[in-house]
Image 1 (cartoon, rainbow, N blue to C red):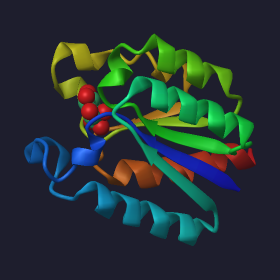
Image 2: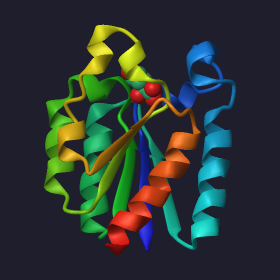
Image 3: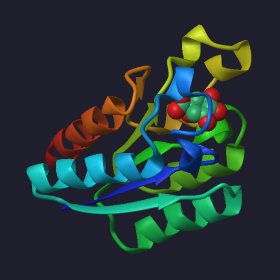
Length: 145
Ligand code: DQA
């Protein structure tokens, strides 16, 4: 089983950006947590981060062509307005879990809307980096369903 964990803009700045909201662990720490989780689950993990909408779309399409079994995505601010990423996610047939580190519902109103969530299998919000690990568990369950 092969899954892709995809992170959007500014998530490479974890540990630098707004630590009170996103915590002090950096992107490298996140990648280590994800790899350990993948090893525990006995699955193959691919990761990708980009600050560019087009690159994220290209990576989603590549995941489809590579027959990836499932996707975890934190689209960052694109969550709130990228119909192009939504359309790319809607094109792939595998389960998709959307993750947000912060509780977007406690924050500014523009963060309350996700244009991507309706084409995802489920969403995990506000549980910090742990949310990615829970998303991986959920994804494996969905894939095995
Ligand atoms: C985020 C929430 C978004 O509103 C924000 O733009 C991000 C991170 C989160 O993980 O909490 O970049 O997706």
